[in-house]
Image (cartoon, rainbow, N blue to C red; front, side, top):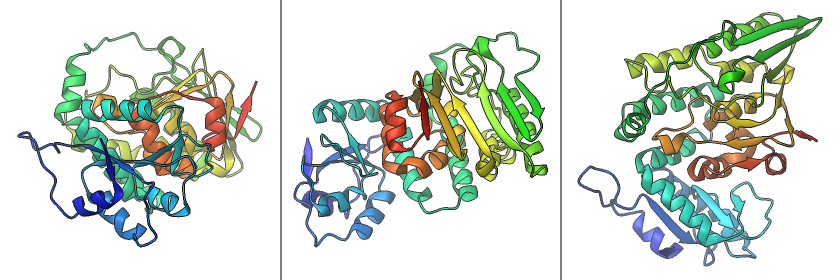
Amino acid sequence: MIARLVDLLHEVELPLRLTTDGVPAEPLKVVDLQDAGSEVDEAQLAAHLGLRPQVIVGVLPDDPSPNALRLARACTVALTRSPLDAAQAVTVRDLDDAVATLSSQVSAAPVAAISLHQLLCVQEHLPVAQALMAESAMYSTLLAGAEFARWRAARPVRRAPETAEVVSVHREEDLLQIVLQRPARRNAYNRMMRDGLVDALTTATVDASLDVMLTGAGPDFCAGGDLDEFGSATDVSVAHLLRTGRSAGWLLHRLRERTAVRLHGHCIGAGIELPAFAGRVIAEACTAIRLPEVAMGLVPGAGGTVSIVRRIGRWRTAWLALSGQVVSAGLALDWGLVDEVEE
């Protein structure tokens, strides 16, 4: 059911109904932005909705007014059928199908979805270092939650033999070439790869003469975090300290003016969250991008709520994470998630 904006303005002053488990009974609210008026204060509405534990999906008319576009910025994400060049709007073929996709995903993992909404709103104006801290703290919180526990219990851990070198580093004059080297596991991002990448990037932070090129061996750049390591931390608070103390995302951000990344194949989770920090991202036409973490009961944890937001805005980041849908290289280029597509 789609609510009117005037009704939403009344509801934000009321406490949410909760289930017996303490989860909001209505984790997602769809609101029609067609009747948006100039008397509504965008900043005040955004402040209310950002704190409210509820994902807000705005539906824009085909020819939205300036007021509708303005108030769409207060939502988690806004959907439209029109090809709008507005960061707060995602163009979809069928509004009903898009709303149904979001509703299904949010209903399956309401705590993770709402946590993502709140995190994106809080982070929006934070510096990168503080935003990474906030993401990691939220990620650790959700690691200890029931939604992730259900996901983990349904997927037995498989231990595969590890390759000797998961990150290769080669210096050629003033270029440091870093290659992710777990092709048999589609370059799944694990602790060894994180540590190898952090060590390689640290070399470039020490030597200001170096440029960095990051690539991946095999058919995929990086198929995301190693699922067999998810949930293996015995202490999620210590895991937060490890994530923030050895953050490849933070180093890539510091080196962004000197770093380029080449994407190909699947770029899932960490496989797009880390590259998005770089100053230049080149994608092959076959590149497929996806954020799967919310469906696992988590939020992006490799820096994606920071890096991707700074490229495409928090609204399209929310769509990526909440819908779980694949984004093509062409759409990524249109949004600014990548800077160049090579055929």
